[in-house]
Length: 115
Image (cartoon, rainbow, N blue to C red; front, side, top):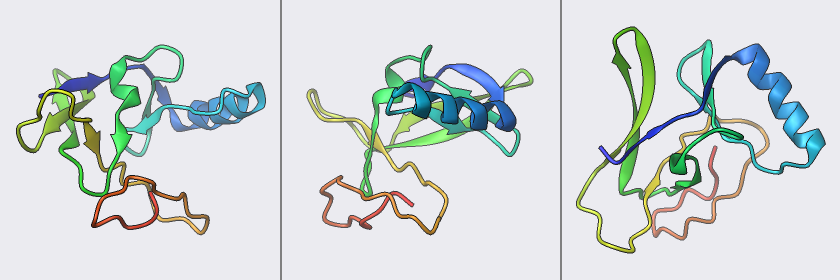
């Protein structure tokens, strides 16, 4: 285990409203991570360092949803030993959409987009 992705647990309806509000406020980046169909963790204003982990098409970590008690949590685990000063990355696995988000990870196996 590397770190838990923490923030406010919200429903999809609230996430949609917040995403629009963040855009209107010029926040630029929002940190919304889907747990399941109904639940999203919003780390935009009250998250931890996990929200700053970048995407890579060849990541050294992966995100896993676990259940503790009755609460679902997102935990980042390493795939391999990670060296000092090595960037921590995982594959965001964004859903496929018509508008592609360019990937700039630089991996030899880069897909070219995050979705």
